[in-house]
Structure formats: structure tokens, C-alpha cells
Image 1 (cartoon, rainbow, N blue to C red):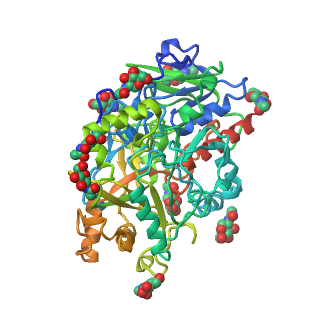
Image 2: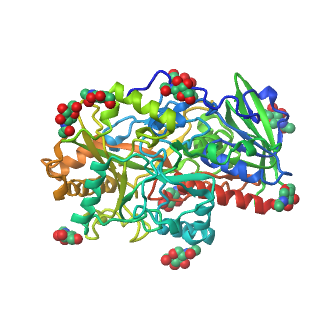
Image 3: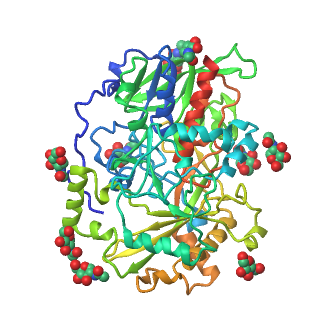
Length: 582
Ligand SMILES: *[C@@H]1O[C@H](CO)[C@@H](O)[C@H](O)[C@H]1NC(C)=O
Ligand SMILES: *[C@@H]1O[C@H](CO)[C@@H](O)[C@H](O)[C@H]1NC(C)=O
Ligand SMILES: *[C@@H]1O[C@H](CO)[C@@H](O)[C@H](O)[C@H]1NC(C)=O
Ligand SMILES: *[C@@H]1O[C@H](CO)[C@@H](O)[C@H](O)[C@H]1NC(C)=O
Ligand SMILES: *[C@@H]1O[C@H](CO)[C@@H](O)[C@H](O)[C@H]1NC(C)=O
Ligand SMILES: *[C@@H]1O[C@H](CO)[C@@H](O)[C@H](O)[C@H]1NC(C)=O
Ligand SMILES: *[C@@H]1O[C@H](CO)[C@@H](O)[C@H](O)[C@H]1NC(C)=O
Ligand SMILES: *[C@@H]1O[C@H](CO)[C@@H](O)[C@H](O)[C@H]1NC(C)=O
Ligand SMILES: *[C@@H]1O[C@H](CO)[C@@H](O)[C@H](O)[C@H]1NC(C)=O
């Protein structure tokens, strides 16, 4: 994709971002009630909600730079570029070779602009999908806490959300269900604001021509996601809506009880004490050690330390602090504070497989990405009026949520991993562009296995807290996932057999139909990539004043992009913290 040389512009300079500290020397103190580690999606929600109480002080430590002036972080169409490895906003992490996926090493995309949800990856950035009601009811069941059930969590979805008209103000009647959306929360959510009408019509007509396999679903965020519907994004007025824009408004930033320090990379939790308060939680960390420039500092938390550092950062910090598997820690020379073998285990990942076809049309994203004149025009239009193709991210116009057939032989390998009959095994994403990057016009269908059985891990490579951790996604380590995805591909191939595609669809870039099922499975293993890793329950038992508030507290990855779930975890998490200190 072309990236204009003027991609970094100081749009917001001059706006009063006075409480975002660029230098540790400017911080008024290093003693707070709460220290929040990580200024991503969850961390900023927690910080914003806790400081609603003016007698509570909060410090957020964020490793990345500010979003100020980072145009890629504002323009939805450019969103994919920011977390790419090799940019200043990335950790440049990669996985260890994935034996289940032909030994491929994948870049682990983890944008660290504080604006950003750290789970930003190509497919995931701005998608707003809540998952199935059954996902949350299963969390309630697994945790024994009814507060995680869909009915109890639903008000938090509404509290977080502000449904917003799309940038082109088109009639959205019949494209979503207003009854399941919030209207006054901090995060703007909308349907695409630029139409790829020809492609969209073929997708919608397929739901009419093959309704048995591909029924239309008015709103995939109702708790019953199955079917094909219009994608919803965290976008408002043609700009990305994020924790930073929604929860860290200028008014919140001016709160005297909230400080945010940028460029502060947390190494570990320190100053462990015996807690006298709660016998069941005998230990407490009082300090958070972080590196600023080349020097180490400690921020003290008198009430709680809240880890919102995401699926890699959170376990890495716990392990660095001596909280983890004793044998592994001892082998690295790290002394164990508490032997918790589960830390960093059970990582799971949605494997993605994309298929592209040439099309007999000029109305694809390539008309912009392969034409510098058009690209510059589109950018200027966004800059002028926040309209045009740059108001949307490139991932897709629609998504479909599908289940394996009930009689599928893959259930002989493993029982159904989905949380119930109304929850998906697959997500299918519909995209008006190709993946090959070759000249011409293409469309793509991407299949993701959203109820994976494979599990991976995050472990330390050394006692150096700043060393890159070993990230193993465990991609396709369980045969179930590869065979299930092979069946999922058949759904995509069936989708394009609807009559509406005749005359529009050309040749596929790879002919999957000529492969035997075994060849197809091998091909999928070799050509699938990760979406984003997630973690199950990391509740830090044994410690007073230490919580994890990010998507990693969900015991099993929801069958969805996790941005929406991260918001409700953070909103409820903030309420739980408030409740225990009021
Ligand atoms: C990632 O690589 C880029 C380009 O080399 C660099 O600017 C950035 O600082 C790196 N990120 C980290 C966390 O080292
Ligand atoms: C979890 O679900 C099982 C099976 O439906 C049920 O027997 C059990 O009581 C549930 N547990 C909780 C805590 O809801
Ligand atoms: C807290 O931990 C830091 C880093 O290990 C150490 O330098 C400092 O002395 C400790 N403070 C107290 C009061 O123990
Ligand atoms: C990992 O997940 C499995 C099943 O989901 C569970 O039985 C196991 O206890 C988990 N292990 C850890 C360390 O959390
Ligand atoms: C695509 O654009 C080219 C150049 O503008 C034009 O010649 C051609 O007819 C167009 N093709 C289609 C299918 O619209
Ligand atoms: C490139 O875009 C310009 C401006 O929209 C248009 O006039 C021109 O025909 C396009 N070129 C091709 C090859 O489609
Ligand atoms: C964007 O708009 C500003 C004025 O609002 C202008 O100075 C700048 O040149 C524009 N940039 C582009 C690429 O059009
Ligand atoms: C599985 O069910 C589908 C209908 O849902 C049917 O077409 C197919 O033949 C069945 N396959 C087997 C192996 O029974
Ligand atoms: C605000 O925080 C203080 C100190 O923790 C607490 O005593 C008070 O109850 C809180 N107020 C509310 C409305 O929660």
C-alpha cells in the first residue's frame, strides 16, 4: 500500500494535553493510590473511570509514544499500518516457529501507540463484534460469577457505546438493530461510511439466494451472531474512535488526580510485602519498576496495581516479577515470589486463511491502492471533509458467523469447543480487495477459526526483563483446528457459487477446488496466519492489591474480535475496583 510522505502531521498540537507527561522528571510524584500498567484500550477505561472520584489518584504507565500527530492512528483506512513491525509504534515481536503451521514465524503485531488497542492486527483493528451471549454465559459458568453473564454484561456494552451515523450519512435502516446499541457512551460505533456498492450487493444477494447456509443477520451484536451481516466499526465522523479519544477527553486529561507517563516501559512489580489485611491474600507488591530512557524508577501504589498490559505484556510482567512456574523461573535465575504455573499458559489464537478472486470490475480497493493519483485525491478528501474511502478501515464490508455442520467428523477428534448452538466456529470476512498485491482488481473471503482448540504460551527467554519473550501461538497444534478450518473453506467456496457472482467473479488466485481434502489441510497449515493471541483467567490469586484488567481475564477467547469484550471487561473491572474501595 502507498503511504504518503505526509503521513505524520501534528493535527492535535496545541490542544491542552497537559497531563500526558513526556518526561519522568516532570511527574509531580511517584506515589499514587492506583498504578495502571498499560495505556491501551482497557488501561485508559480503568484510569478514566477511577478518576471520576476526585479523591482517588491514578498513574498510567505507557511504553509507547502519544497518538498526537500520528495520522495513521486517526485515519481508519491507514489503521493497518501503525502496528506493523518496524514502525516506532511496534514492539517488533515475532512468534517462535509454529510447528503446526509449516514452521512459519509470524510477526506479532502489537501496536504500542497508547491510543491503540494493543491487539490491533490486520483483521482486528476497528472491528466491533461482541461475541455470542453463550460466550459470556460460559464465562459466568466457568468463573462462578453471574456478573459475567450476557444479561449482566449487556448494560456495560451500552455504557461503552455511542451509536453514530456513518460518515456518508446513508440510510442504515435494515443494516443494524438500534435496540441493541448504546447511544451515550464514550466509544463511537458505526457501519462503513463509504460504499463499495457493487461488491456489497453481491454479498447481500447471496444471503437471498443461499439463505439456508448464509442467512442474513440484521445485527451480529445482539448476542446471536450467526449469519451474514453488516460490519460495525469503532469509527465516528470518519475517524477512529478509541479509548484515547473516547475515555481520555481533554476534560478527563485535566483532572488533577490523573497522570499519564509515556515512554515508560514496565519491567516488573517490586517491593513485595506480607499483607496483614487479607489473610487469604498474604502477599502484596507495592511498587512498579519501569525504565525511562536508560534509568530505572519505581512508582508506588498504596491501594492497587492494575495490569492492563495485554496478552503478552501482562504475563511477561508477572513472570519478570517472580509470579509463575517455579521450575521455569528458577532455571532463569529469577526468584519465585509465588508459584503460579498457569501464568503465560493457554494462549489461544484465531487462525485466519484468506482467499482472493480476480473480478470483472474496477470498483475495488485496488482502484485506490494501485493508483497514486486516486490515492492522493482520496486522502485529500478525508483531510478536507472526513468523507470518501479513507473513512473506513480496509478489512471488510460484512462479516459472517458460521457453525460446523452438526454431523461433521471433526467432532470425533474433539468435542464441540463452541459455547453453544448460537455461537460460531467460523468468522467469514468479506473484502473488496485482494491479498496478493498483484496489479488488477480482486475480492477476498477470509475464514477465521474462532473457536480454536489449540493452545500456546508466553514464556521468558532470559532473566532480563526487557528481553523479548518467547511467543508460541500453538497454531494448529491440535488437528481439530486444521480440519475444522478445511471445512470452513468449503463454506467460502460455496458462498461464491450463488448465481449473483456469475460474470463478476473471475479466477481465484489459488485454485483450492482441485485439491484433495488432505492437500487442502496441508495448504491451510502452510498459508494461515494468526489473528491475535488471547489468554484465559490470570486473576492473581495470593496477592492483595493486584488485578489484571484486560481481555486476558476471559477464560476462553470469545468467538469475536475482542475489542468490544475488552471494553466491557474494563468497564466492569473499574466498577469492581471502585466497589472495593468505597
Ligand atoms: C521497532 O523497530 C522500529 C524500526 O527499527 C524502531 O523504531 C522501534 O523503536 C522498535 N520498537 C522497539 C520497541 O524496539
Ligand atoms: C455450569 O453449567 C453446568 C452445566 O450446564 C451446571 O451444571 C452448573 O451448575 C453451572 N455452574 C454455574 C456456576 O453456573
Ligand atoms: C522498592 O524496590 C526497588 C527496586 O527493587 C528498590 O530499589 C527499593 O529500595 C524498594 N523500596 C523499598 C521501600 O523496599
Ligand atoms: C488450560 O485450559 C484447560 C482447558 O481449557 C484447563 O483444563 C487448564 O486448567 C488450563 N491451564 C491453565 C494453566 O490455566
Ligand atoms: C476499468 O477501467 C479502465 C480504465 O479506466 C476501463 O478501460 C475499463 O473498461 C474498466 N473496466 C471495467 C470492467 O469497468
Ligand atoms: C487513476 O485515478 C485517476 C483519478 O481518479 C483517474 O482519472 C485515472 O483514470 C485512474 N487511472 C486508472 C488507470 O484507472
Ligand atoms: C490537510 O488539510 C490542511 C488544512 O486543514 C492542509 O494544510 C494540508 O495541506 C492538507 N493535507 C493534504 C494532504 O491535503
Ligand atoms: C451432514 O449433514 C448435511 C446436511 O446438513 C448433509 O448434506 C450431509 O450429507 C451430512 N453428511 C454426512 C456425512 O452425514
Ligand atoms: C471516593 O474514594 C474515596 C477514597 O477511596 C472513598 O472513600 C469514597 O467512598 C469514594 N467515593 C465514591 C462515591 O465512591
